[in-house]
Length: 502
Ligand SMILES: Cc1cc2nc3c(=O)[nH]c(=O)nc-3n(C[C@H](O)[C@H](O)[C@H](O)COP(=O)(O)OP(=O)(O)OC[C@H]3O[C@@H](n4cnc5c(N)ncnc54)[C@H](O)[C@@H]3O)c2cc1C
Image 1 (tube, rainbow, N blue to C red):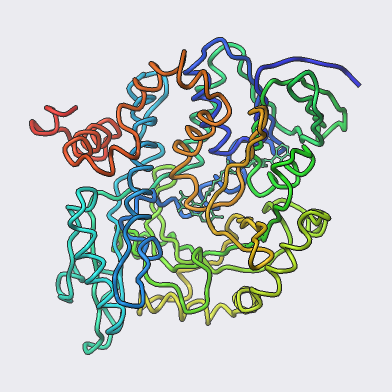
Image 2 (image 1 turned 135 degrees about the vertical axis):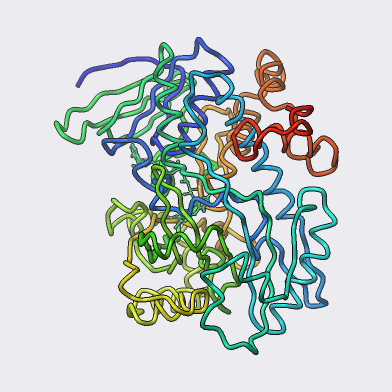
Protein backbone atom coordinates (compact mmCIF):
# COMPACT_ATOMS: atom_id res chain seq x y z
CA UNK A 1 0.00 0.00 0.00
CA UNK A 2 1.39 3.39 -1.02
CA UNK A 3 1.70 5.94 1.80
CA UNK A 4 1.04 8.94 2.31
CA UNK A 5 0.34 12.07 0.35
CA UNK A 6 -0.59 15.15 2.39
CA UNK A 7 -3.17 17.78 1.47
CA UNK A 8 -4.95 20.51 3.43
CA UNK A 9 -8.47 19.30 2.65
CA UNK A 10 -10.09 16.04 1.48
CA UNK A 11 -13.69 16.32 0.29
CA UNK A 12 -15.58 13.03 -0.02
CA UNK A 13 -18.04 12.98 -2.93
CA UNK A 14 -18.28 15.10 -6.08
CA UNK A 15 -21.83 16.39 -5.63
CA UNK A 16 -22.97 20.01 -5.38
CA UNK A 17 -21.97 20.29 -1.69
CA UNK A 18 -18.29 19.27 -2.05
CA UNK A 19 -17.93 21.13 -5.36
CA UNK A 20 -19.25 24.34 -3.77
CA UNK A 21 -17.10 24.06 -0.66
CA UNK A 22 -13.97 23.25 -2.66
CA UNK A 23 -14.40 26.27 -4.96
CA UNK A 24 -15.22 28.55 -2.02
CA UNK A 25 -12.11 27.45 -0.09
CA UNK A 26 -9.93 27.96 -3.16
CA UNK A 27 -11.33 31.49 -3.59
CA UNK A 28 -10.59 32.27 0.05
CA UNK A 29 -7.12 30.72 0.01
CA UNK A 30 -5.66 30.17 -3.48
CA UNK A 31 -2.68 28.30 -1.95
CA UNK A 32 -4.85 25.65 -0.30
CA UNK A 33 -4.15 22.07 -1.45
CA UNK A 34 -7.25 19.94 -1.82
CA UNK A 35 -8.52 16.66 -3.22
CA UNK A 36 -12.09 15.64 -4.05
CA UNK A 37 -12.61 11.85 -3.95
CA UNK A 38 -15.59 10.40 -5.88
CA UNK A 39 -16.57 6.77 -6.20
CA UNK A 40 -18.44 7.15 -9.50
CA UNK A 41 -16.77 8.00 -12.81
CA UNK A 42 -18.16 11.55 -13.03
CA UNK A 43 -19.34 14.46 -10.90
CA UNK A 44 -23.01 14.83 -9.88
CA UNK A 45 -23.77 11.12 -10.35
CA UNK A 46 -26.13 10.86 -7.35
CA UNK A 47 -28.67 13.37 -5.95
CA UNK A 48 -27.08 16.34 -7.74
CA UNK A 49 -27.73 14.76 -11.15
CA UNK A 50 -30.45 16.81 -12.92
CA UNK A 51 -32.76 13.81 -13.35
CA UNK A 52 -32.39 12.76 -9.71
CA UNK A 53 -33.81 16.00 -8.28
CA UNK A 54 -36.50 18.47 -9.32
CA UNK A 55 -34.14 21.34 -10.04
CA UNK A 56 -36.34 23.85 -8.26
CA UNK A 57 -34.38 26.88 -7.17
CA UNK A 58 -36.06 26.75 -3.76
CA UNK A 59 -36.82 30.33 -2.73
CA UNK A 60 -40.06 29.79 -0.82
CA UNK A 61 -42.08 31.20 -3.73
CA UNK A 62 -44.30 28.16 -4.31
CA UNK A 63 -43.61 25.43 -1.69
CA UNK A 64 -46.72 25.37 0.50
CA UNK A 65 -45.05 23.25 3.21
CA UNK A 66 -42.64 26.14 3.96
CA UNK A 67 -45.59 28.20 5.28
CA UNK A 68 -47.43 26.04 7.83
CA UNK A 69 -50.87 27.08 9.03
CA UNK A 70 -51.73 26.98 12.74
CA UNK A 71 -55.09 25.75 14.05
CA UNK A 72 -56.28 29.39 14.35
CA UNK A 73 -55.58 29.91 10.62
CA UNK A 74 -52.42 32.01 11.06
CA UNK A 75 -49.75 31.32 8.43
CA UNK A 76 -46.11 31.31 9.57
CA UNK A 77 -43.80 32.65 6.84
CA UNK A 78 -40.45 32.50 8.72
CA UNK A 79 -39.14 29.42 6.90
CA UNK A 80 -40.13 30.72 3.44
CA UNK A 81 -38.39 34.07 4.13
CA UNK A 82 -35.25 32.32 5.39
CA UNK A 83 -34.99 29.95 2.42
CA UNK A 84 -35.61 32.85 0.04
CA UNK A 85 -32.68 34.83 1.43
CA UNK A 86 -30.49 31.71 1.51
CA UNK A 87 -31.18 31.30 -2.20
CA UNK A 88 -30.13 34.92 -2.77
CA UNK A 89 -26.83 34.01 -1.05
CA UNK A 90 -26.39 31.08 -3.48
CA UNK A 91 -27.14 33.46 -6.36
CA UNK A 92 -24.49 35.90 -5.09
CA UNK A 93 -21.84 33.15 -5.31
CA UNK A 94 -22.94 32.04 -8.78
CA UNK A 95 -23.04 35.70 -9.93
CA UNK A 96 -19.55 36.30 -8.53
CA UNK A 97 -18.19 33.26 -10.40
CA UNK A 98 -20.03 34.10 -13.63
CA UNK A 99 -18.61 37.65 -13.59
CA UNK A 100 -15.08 36.20 -13.38
CA UNK A 101 -15.39 35.17 -17.04
CA UNK A 102 -13.37 31.95 -16.63
CA UNK A 103 -16.27 30.09 -14.98
CA UNK A 104 -18.39 29.64 -18.10
CA UNK A 105 -21.94 30.60 -18.87
CA UNK A 106 -24.70 30.70 -16.25
CA UNK A 107 -27.24 29.74 -18.96
CA UNK A 108 -26.06 26.12 -18.73
CA UNK A 109 -27.32 25.80 -15.14
CA UNK A 110 -29.99 28.40 -14.33
CA UNK A 111 -33.14 29.32 -16.29
CA UNK A 112 -36.06 31.60 -15.48
CA UNK A 113 -39.21 29.52 -14.80
CA UNK A 114 -42.24 31.03 -12.96
CA UNK A 115 -43.10 29.43 -9.59
CA UNK A 116 -46.81 28.79 -8.91
CA UNK A 117 -48.82 27.36 -6.04
CA UNK A 118 -52.09 25.67 -6.93
CA UNK A 119 -54.86 24.56 -4.55
CA UNK A 120 -58.23 22.84 -4.86
CA UNK A 121 -61.27 22.98 -2.56
CA UNK A 122 -62.48 25.53 0.00
CA UNK A 123 -59.87 24.84 2.70
CA UNK A 124 -57.02 24.92 0.17
CA UNK A 125 -58.28 28.25 -1.19
CA UNK A 126 -58.66 29.86 2.24
CA UNK A 127 -55.11 28.72 3.15
CA UNK A 128 -53.61 30.08 -0.08
CA UNK A 129 -55.46 33.40 0.31
CA UNK A 130 -54.16 33.86 3.87
CA UNK A 131 -50.65 32.77 2.81
CA UNK A 132 -50.70 35.32 -0.01
CA UNK A 133 -51.97 38.08 2.33
CA UNK A 134 -49.10 37.60 4.79
CA UNK A 135 -46.33 36.70 2.33
CA UNK A 136 -46.93 39.50 -0.20
CA UNK A 137 -46.36 42.11 2.56
CA UNK A 138 -42.75 40.91 2.84
CA UNK A 139 -40.31 42.56 0.39
CA UNK A 140 -39.00 39.17 -0.84
CA UNK A 141 -42.51 38.23 -2.05
CA UNK A 142 -43.81 41.65 -3.10
CA UNK A 143 -44.20 40.50 -6.74
CA UNK A 144 -46.46 37.56 -5.88
CA UNK A 145 -49.85 37.53 -7.70
CA UNK A 146 -53.01 35.75 -6.50
CA UNK A 147 -56.04 34.60 -8.49
CA UNK A 148 -59.25 32.60 -8.21
CA UNK A 149 -60.14 33.53 -11.78
CA UNK A 150 -60.06 30.53 -14.11
CA UNK A 151 -59.27 32.58 -17.23
CA UNK A 152 -56.18 33.97 -15.50
CA UNK A 153 -55.21 30.45 -14.39
CA UNK A 154 -55.60 29.26 -17.99
CA UNK A 155 -53.09 31.93 -18.98
CA UNK A 156 -50.67 30.97 -16.19
CA UNK A 157 -51.06 27.16 -16.54
CA UNK A 158 -52.55 26.42 -20.00
CA UNK A 159 -51.91 22.68 -19.71
CA UNK A 160 -53.65 22.36 -16.38
CA UNK A 161 -57.06 23.93 -16.99
CA UNK A 162 -58.79 22.06 -19.87
CA UNK A 163 -60.94 19.07 -18.88
CA UNK A 164 -61.84 20.35 -15.40
CA UNK A 165 -65.29 20.47 -13.81
CA UNK A 166 -66.33 24.14 -14.29
CA UNK A 167 -67.67 24.17 -10.71
CA UNK A 168 -64.31 23.21 -9.16
CA UNK A 169 -63.02 25.65 -6.52
CA UNK A 170 -59.43 26.60 -7.36
CA UNK A 171 -56.85 29.27 -6.56
CA UNK A 172 -53.26 29.95 -7.55
CA UNK A 173 -50.39 32.29 -6.86
CA UNK A 174 -47.58 33.13 -9.24
CA UNK A 175 -44.13 34.65 -8.97
CA UNK A 176 -42.62 35.26 -12.39
CA UNK A 177 -39.02 35.36 -11.14
CA UNK A 178 -38.65 31.70 -10.17
CA UNK A 179 -35.89 29.46 -11.47
CA UNK A 180 -35.06 25.97 -12.65
CA UNK A 181 -31.50 24.97 -11.74
CA UNK A 182 -29.53 22.16 -13.36
CA UNK A 183 -27.51 21.27 -10.28
CA UNK A 184 -25.62 18.61 -12.25
CA UNK A 185 -24.36 21.12 -14.82
CA UNK A 186 -23.51 23.56 -12.03
CA UNK A 187 -21.59 20.87 -10.10
CA UNK A 188 -19.56 19.89 -13.15
CA UNK A 189 -18.89 23.54 -14.00
CA UNK A 190 -17.66 24.11 -10.42
CA UNK A 191 -15.42 21.01 -10.60
CA UNK A 192 -13.95 22.09 -13.95
CA UNK A 193 -13.28 25.57 -12.57
CA UNK A 194 -11.70 24.03 -9.46
CA UNK A 195 -9.27 21.81 -11.33
CA UNK A 196 -8.12 24.70 -13.53
CA UNK A 197 -6.38 26.01 -10.38
CA UNK A 198 -3.12 24.53 -9.09
CA UNK A 199 -3.19 22.03 -6.19
CA UNK A 200 -6.83 21.06 -6.70
CA UNK A 201 -7.66 17.56 -7.92
CA UNK A 202 -10.80 15.49 -8.42
CA UNK A 203 -10.19 11.74 -8.33
CA UNK A 204 -12.94 9.57 -9.84
CA UNK A 205 -13.66 5.85 -9.32
CA UNK A 206 -12.17 6.07 -5.83
CA UNK A 207 -14.07 5.11 -2.69
CA UNK A 208 -13.25 6.50 0.74
CA UNK A 209 -13.27 3.40 2.93
CA UNK A 210 -12.04 4.69 6.29
CA UNK A 211 -10.85 7.60 8.40
CA UNK A 212 -8.57 7.75 11.37
CA UNK A 213 -7.18 10.57 13.47
CA UNK A 214 -3.56 11.54 12.89
CA UNK A 215 -1.47 14.56 13.97
CA UNK A 216 -4.48 16.78 14.69
CA UNK A 217 -5.99 15.91 11.30
CA UNK A 218 -7.09 12.72 9.54
CA UNK A 219 -5.69 9.85 7.51
CA UNK A 220 -8.19 8.97 4.80
CA UNK A 221 -8.14 5.47 3.25
CA UNK A 222 -9.09 5.43 -0.43
CA UNK A 223 -9.71 2.39 -2.63
CA UNK A 224 -9.63 2.38 -6.43
CA UNK A 225 -12.96 0.77 -7.40
CA UNK A 226 -11.50 -0.75 -10.58
CA UNK A 227 -8.08 -2.05 -9.51
CA UNK A 228 -8.79 -2.53 -5.79
CA UNK A 229 -5.53 -0.68 -4.97
CA UNK A 230 -5.59 1.40 -1.82
CA UNK A 231 -3.78 4.55 -0.75
CA UNK A 232 -3.84 6.85 2.24
CA UNK A 233 -3.98 10.63 2.26
CA UNK A 234 -3.32 12.85 5.28
CA UNK A 235 -5.56 15.90 5.55
CA UNK A 236 -5.90 18.71 8.07
CA UNK A 237 -9.64 18.94 7.32
CA UNK A 238 -12.13 16.41 5.91
CA UNK A 239 -15.60 17.17 4.52
CA UNK A 240 -18.00 14.25 4.22
CA UNK A 241 -20.10 15.45 1.28
CA UNK A 242 -21.10 11.90 0.40
CA UNK A 243 -24.86 12.63 0.23
CA UNK A 244 -26.85 9.70 1.61
CA UNK A 245 -23.59 7.87 2.38
CA UNK A 246 -22.29 10.62 4.68
CA UNK A 247 -23.79 8.89 7.74
CA UNK A 248 -21.69 5.67 7.65
CA UNK A 249 -18.54 7.72 7.03
CA UNK A 250 -19.42 10.01 9.94
CA UNK A 251 -19.87 6.90 12.09
CA UNK A 252 -16.50 5.58 10.87
CA UNK A 253 -14.82 8.80 12.05
CA UNK A 254 -15.90 7.93 15.61
CA UNK A 255 -16.22 11.62 16.59
CA UNK A 256 -18.30 12.24 19.69
CA UNK A 257 -20.72 14.47 17.73
CA UNK A 258 -21.67 11.52 15.45
CA UNK A 259 -23.24 9.52 18.26
CA UNK A 260 -26.98 8.95 18.17
CA UNK A 261 -27.56 9.83 14.51
CA UNK A 262 -29.34 7.35 12.25
CA UNK A 263 -30.70 7.51 8.72
CA UNK A 264 -34.16 6.90 7.24
CA UNK A 265 -33.80 6.44 3.47
CA UNK A 266 -36.65 7.48 1.18
CA UNK A 267 -36.56 6.74 -2.52
CA UNK A 268 -38.35 8.65 -5.23
CA UNK A 269 -39.83 8.28 -8.69
CA UNK A 270 -41.08 10.78 -11.28
CA UNK A 271 -43.25 10.77 -14.33
CA UNK A 272 -41.34 12.42 -17.17
CA UNK A 273 -42.66 13.77 -20.47
CA UNK A 274 -40.45 14.82 -23.40
CA UNK A 275 -43.22 15.24 -26.00
CA UNK A 276 -42.64 18.79 -27.34
CA UNK A 277 -46.35 19.19 -28.15
CA UNK A 278 -47.18 18.79 -24.45
CA UNK A 279 -44.06 20.44 -23.02
CA UNK A 280 -44.61 23.70 -24.94
CA UNK A 281 -47.90 24.34 -23.07
CA UNK A 282 -46.35 24.39 -19.61
CA UNK A 283 -43.73 26.94 -18.56
CA UNK A 284 -43.85 26.82 -14.76
CA UNK A 285 -43.13 24.90 -11.59
CA UNK A 286 -46.54 24.33 -10.03
CA UNK A 287 -46.55 23.09 -6.43
CA UNK A 288 -49.64 21.90 -4.56
CA UNK A 289 -50.43 20.42 -1.14
CA UNK A 290 -49.24 17.00 0.04
CA UNK A 291 -51.82 14.30 0.72
CA UNK A 292 -52.74 13.97 4.42
CA UNK A 293 -50.18 11.75 6.24
CA UNK A 294 -47.51 12.02 3.57
CA UNK A 295 -44.02 13.37 4.31
CA UNK A 296 -43.08 16.91 3.21
CA UNK A 297 -40.83 15.73 0.37
CA UNK A 298 -43.80 14.14 -1.40
CA UNK A 299 -45.53 17.47 -2.09
CA UNK A 300 -46.66 16.98 -5.70
CA UNK A 301 -45.50 19.35 -8.40
CA UNK A 302 -45.59 19.63 -12.19
CA UNK A 303 -42.36 21.17 -13.38
CA UNK A 304 -40.73 22.53 -16.45
CA UNK A 305 -37.16 21.15 -16.46
CA UNK A 306 -34.41 22.62 -18.57
CA UNK A 307 -31.56 20.15 -19.02
CA UNK A 308 -28.83 20.60 -21.66
CA UNK A 309 -30.92 23.27 -23.37
CA UNK A 310 -33.96 20.95 -23.79
CA UNK A 311 -37.28 21.31 -22.00
CA UNK A 312 -39.16 18.40 -20.41
CA UNK A 313 -41.91 18.04 -17.82
CA UNK A 314 -41.51 16.21 -14.53
CA UNK A 315 -44.33 15.23 -12.21
CA UNK A 316 -44.02 13.76 -8.75
CA UNK A 317 -42.19 12.81 -6.70
CA UNK A 318 -43.73 9.49 -5.69
CA UNK A 319 -41.89 8.59 -2.49
CA UNK A 320 -40.95 5.01 -1.62
CA UNK A 321 -39.30 2.84 1.00
CA UNK A 322 -35.82 1.44 0.50
CA UNK A 323 -32.82 0.46 2.62
CA UNK A 324 -30.23 1.99 0.23
CA UNK A 325 -28.45 5.24 1.17
CA UNK A 326 -27.46 6.02 -2.44
CA UNK A 327 -29.25 5.31 -5.72
CA UNK A 328 -26.20 3.20 -6.64
CA UNK A 329 -25.87 1.95 -3.05
CA UNK A 330 -26.47 -1.39 -1.33
CA UNK A 331 -29.58 -2.80 0.37
CA UNK A 332 -27.28 -3.43 3.38
CA UNK A 333 -26.70 0.33 3.88
CA UNK A 334 -29.48 0.74 6.46
CA UNK A 335 -28.86 -2.44 8.50
CA UNK A 336 -25.09 -1.77 8.55
CA UNK A 337 -25.67 1.73 9.95
CA UNK A 338 -27.24 0.41 13.16
CA UNK A 339 -24.99 1.05 16.20
CA UNK A 340 -25.40 0.75 19.96
CA UNK A 341 -25.62 4.58 20.08
CA UNK A 342 -28.43 4.95 17.50
CA UNK A 343 -30.52 1.79 17.89
CA UNK A 344 -32.72 3.51 20.55
CA UNK A 345 -33.58 6.55 18.39
CA UNK A 346 -34.02 4.32 15.30
CA UNK A 347 -36.46 1.98 17.07
CA UNK A 348 -38.37 4.94 18.53
CA UNK A 349 -38.72 6.46 15.05
CA UNK A 350 -39.81 3.10 13.59
CA UNK A 351 -42.49 2.74 16.32
CA UNK A 352 -43.74 6.35 16.12
CA UNK A 353 -43.78 6.58 12.32
CA UNK A 354 -45.68 3.46 11.28
CA UNK A 355 -48.09 5.63 9.26
CA UNK A 356 -45.20 7.07 7.27
CA UNK A 357 -43.74 3.60 6.58
CA UNK A 358 -47.18 2.36 5.48
CA UNK A 359 -47.56 5.43 3.26
CA UNK A 360 -44.15 4.84 1.63
CA UNK A 361 -44.86 1.16 1.03
CA UNK A 362 -48.26 2.03 -0.50
CA UNK A 363 -46.54 4.58 -2.78
CA UNK A 364 -44.12 1.88 -4.02
CA UNK A 365 -47.03 -0.49 -4.73
CA UNK A 366 -48.93 2.02 -6.92
CA UNK A 367 -49.77 1.00 -10.48
CA UNK A 368 -49.00 3.29 -13.44
CA UNK A 369 -52.75 4.03 -13.67
CA UNK A 370 -52.80 5.20 -10.03
CA UNK A 371 -49.77 7.40 -10.66
CA UNK A 372 -51.49 8.90 -13.71
CA UNK A 373 -54.56 9.60 -11.55
CA UNK A 374 -52.37 11.78 -9.30
CA UNK A 375 -50.98 13.54 -12.38
CA UNK A 376 -54.53 14.15 -13.66
CA UNK A 377 -55.30 16.20 -10.53
CA UNK A 378 -52.86 18.66 -12.14
CA UNK A 379 -53.27 17.88 -15.82
CA UNK A 380 -56.70 16.31 -16.39
CA UNK A 381 -56.09 15.48 -20.04
CA UNK A 382 -52.73 13.70 -19.49
CA UNK A 383 -52.26 10.74 -21.83
CA UNK A 384 -50.40 7.64 -20.58
CA UNK A 385 -48.29 7.36 -23.75
CA UNK A 386 -46.65 10.77 -23.13
CA UNK A 387 -45.25 9.82 -19.72
CA UNK A 388 -42.65 7.38 -18.46
CA UNK A 389 -41.60 6.45 -14.95
CA UNK A 390 -38.05 7.29 -13.86
CA UNK A 391 -36.17 6.67 -10.63
CA UNK A 392 -35.18 9.82 -8.72
CA UNK A 393 -32.36 10.24 -6.20
CA UNK A 394 -32.26 8.92 -2.66
CA UNK A 395 -32.88 11.08 0.39
CA UNK A 396 -31.62 9.91 3.74
CA UNK A 397 -33.62 11.73 6.41
CA UNK A 398 -31.98 12.29 9.77
CA UNK A 399 -32.90 10.28 12.86
CA UNK A 400 -31.81 12.01 16.07
CA UNK A 401 -31.95 11.37 19.79
CA UNK A 402 -34.84 13.12 21.53
CA UNK A 403 -35.14 13.37 25.32
CA UNK A 404 -38.94 12.94 25.28
CA UNK A 405 -39.65 10.58 22.37
CA UNK A 406 -36.36 8.63 22.35
CA UNK A 407 -35.80 9.48 18.70
CA UNK A 408 -37.20 11.85 16.07
CA UNK A 409 -37.23 12.00 12.29
CA UNK A 410 -36.01 15.31 10.88
CA UNK A 411 -36.72 16.47 7.35
CA UNK A 412 -34.11 19.27 7.10
CA UNK A 413 -30.34 19.21 6.81
CA UNK A 414 -27.83 19.16 9.64
CA UNK A 415 -24.18 20.07 9.60
CA UNK A 416 -22.33 17.87 12.09
CA UNK A 417 -18.80 19.04 12.94
CA UNK A 418 -16.03 17.75 15.19
CA UNK A 419 -15.36 20.02 18.18
CA UNK A 420 -11.83 20.80 16.93
CA UNK A 421 -13.18 21.77 13.49
CA UNK A 422 -11.12 19.10 11.68
CA UNK A 423 -14.09 17.24 10.14
CA UNK A 424 -17.65 18.05 9.09
CA UNK A 425 -20.47 16.05 7.52
CA UNK A 426 -23.72 17.08 5.93
CA UNK A 427 -26.73 14.94 6.80
CA UNK A 428 -30.27 15.19 5.40
CA UNK A 429 -31.56 16.47 2.09
CA UNK A 430 -33.92 19.40 2.33
CA UNK A 431 -34.22 22.16 1.11
CA UNK A 432 -31.12 20.84 -0.50
CA UNK A 433 -28.96 22.02 -3.31
CA UNK A 434 -30.55 25.49 -3.53
CA UNK A 435 -29.13 26.49 -0.15
CA UNK A 436 -25.73 24.79 -0.54
CA UNK A 437 -23.82 28.07 -0.35
CA UNK A 438 -25.38 29.13 2.98
CA UNK A 439 -24.67 25.68 4.42
CA UNK A 440 -21.04 25.81 3.29
CA UNK A 441 -20.65 29.33 4.74
CA UNK A 442 -21.98 27.96 8.04
CA UNK A 443 -19.38 25.17 7.79
CA UNK A 444 -16.58 27.68 7.20
CA UNK A 445 -17.67 29.75 10.21
CA UNK A 446 -17.87 26.61 12.38
CA UNK A 447 -14.68 24.84 11.29
CA UNK A 448 -12.43 27.80 10.36
CA UNK A 449 -13.69 30.47 12.80
CA UNK A 450 -10.53 32.54 13.17
CA UNK A 451 -9.81 32.59 9.41
CA UNK A 452 -13.46 33.47 8.65
CA UNK A 453 -13.21 36.48 10.98
CA UNK A 454 -9.61 37.28 10.07
CA UNK A 455 -7.72 36.72 6.82
CA UNK A 456 -10.76 35.50 4.83
CA UNK A 457 -13.20 38.21 6.02
CA UNK A 458 -12.43 40.69 3.22
CA UNK A 459 -12.89 38.14 0.43
CA UNK A 460 -16.09 36.83 2.05
CA UNK A 461 -17.50 40.38 2.15
CA UNK A 462 -16.51 40.88 -1.51
CA UNK A 463 -18.25 37.67 -2.67
CA UNK A 464 -21.25 38.08 -0.34
CA UNK A 465 -22.14 41.76 0.01
CA UNK A 466 -25.36 40.82 1.88
CA UNK A 467 -26.02 37.70 3.96
CA UNK A 468 -29.35 36.09 4.93
CA UNK A 469 -30.18 38.06 8.12
CA UNK A 470 -29.82 41.53 6.62
CA UNK A 471 -31.67 40.47 3.45
CA UNK A 472 -34.59 39.35 5.60
CA UNK A 473 -35.06 42.82 7.11
CA UNK A 474 -33.59 45.43 4.71
CA UNK A 475 -36.04 45.81 1.81
CA UNK A 476 -33.95 48.29 -0.23
CA UNK A 477 -30.80 46.18 0.06
CA UNK A 478 -32.78 43.02 -0.84
CA UNK A 479 -34.09 44.67 -4.02
CA UNK A 480 -30.60 45.85 -4.98
CA UNK A 481 -28.94 42.44 -4.44
CA UNK A 482 -31.82 40.52 -6.04
CA UNK A 483 -31.67 42.74 -9.14
CA UNK A 484 -27.87 42.49 -9.37
CA UNK A 485 -28.06 38.69 -9.11
CA UNK A 486 -30.85 38.41 -11.67
CA UNK A 487 -28.97 40.57 -14.17
CA UNK A 488 -25.63 38.76 -13.62
CA UNK A 489 -27.33 35.36 -14.00
CA UNK A 490 -29.23 36.55 -17.11
CA UNK A 491 -32.59 35.83 -15.48
CA UNK A 492 -33.83 39.30 -16.44
CA UNK A 493 -32.68 41.65 -19.11
CA UNK A 494 -30.75 44.67 -17.86
CA UNK A 495 -32.94 47.79 -18.20
CA UNK A 496 -31.90 51.35 -17.34
CA UNK A 497 -33.55 50.78 -13.93
CA UNK A 498 -31.73 47.49 -13.26
CA UNK A 499 -28.46 48.91 -14.65
CA UNK A 500 -28.41 51.51 -11.89
CA UNK A 501 -28.26 48.56 -9.45
CA UNK A 502 -25.97 46.26 -11.40
C1 LIG B 1 -36.10 13.36 -5.38
C2 LIG B 1 -35.29 14.56 -5.01
C3 LIG B 1 -35.71 15.84 -5.39
C4 LIG B 1 -34.96 16.95 -5.03
N1 LIG B 1 -35.35 18.18 -5.48
C5 LIG B 1 -34.59 19.27 -5.19
C6 LIG B 1 -34.94 20.53 -5.71
O1 LIG B 1 -35.91 20.66 -6.46
N2 LIG B 1 -34.18 21.59 -5.38
C7 LIG B 1 -33.09 21.48 -4.55
O2 LIG B 1 -32.47 22.49 -4.28
N3 LIG B 1 -32.73 20.28 -4.05
C8 LIG B 1 -33.44 19.18 -4.36
N4 LIG B 1 -33.09 17.95 -3.88
C9 LIG B 1 -31.95 17.85 -2.95
C10 LIG B 1 -30.61 17.88 -3.67
O3 LIG B 1 -30.63 17.04 -4.80
C11 LIG B 1 -29.53 17.43 -2.69
O4 LIG B 1 -29.62 18.19 -1.49
C12 LIG B 1 -28.13 17.65 -3.23
O5 LIG B 1 -28.00 17.17 -4.56
C13 LIG B 1 -27.15 16.92 -2.32
O6 LIG B 1 -25.86 17.11 -2.81
P1 LIG B 1 -24.64 16.34 -2.17
O7 LIG B 1 -23.44 16.88 -2.81
O8 LIG B 1 -24.74 16.42 -0.68
O9 LIG B 1 -24.91 14.80 -2.50
P2 LIG B 1 -24.81 13.97 -3.86
O10 LIG B 1 -25.10 14.77 -5.06
O11 LIG B 1 -25.60 12.74 -3.63
O12 LIG B 1 -23.27 13.62 -3.94
C14 LIG B 1 -22.65 12.73 -3.05
C15 LIG B 1 -21.52 12.06 -3.80
O13 LIG B 1 -20.73 11.30 -2.88
C16 LIG B 1 -20.30 10.12 -3.54
N5 LIG B 1 -19.90 9.16 -2.51
C17 LIG B 1 -20.71 8.54 -1.61
N6 LIG B 1 -19.98 7.73 -0.80
C18 LIG B 1 -18.68 7.89 -1.19
C19 LIG B 1 -17.45 7.31 -0.73
N7 LIG B 1 -17.41 6.47 0.30
N8 LIG B 1 -16.30 7.66 -1.37
C20 LIG B 1 -16.30 8.53 -2.42
N9 LIG B 1 -17.46 9.10 -2.88
C21 LIG B 1 -18.63 8.79 -2.27
C22 LIG B 1 -21.51 9.71 -4.35
O14 LIG B 1 -21.17 8.83 -5.41
C23 LIG B 1 -22.02 11.07 -4.85
O15 LIG B 1 -21.49 11.42 -6.11
C24 LIG B 1 -33.79 16.81 -4.24
C25 LIG B 1 -33.36 15.52 -3.87
C26 LIG B 1 -34.08 14.40 -4.27
C27 LIG B 1 -33.57 13.05 -3.92
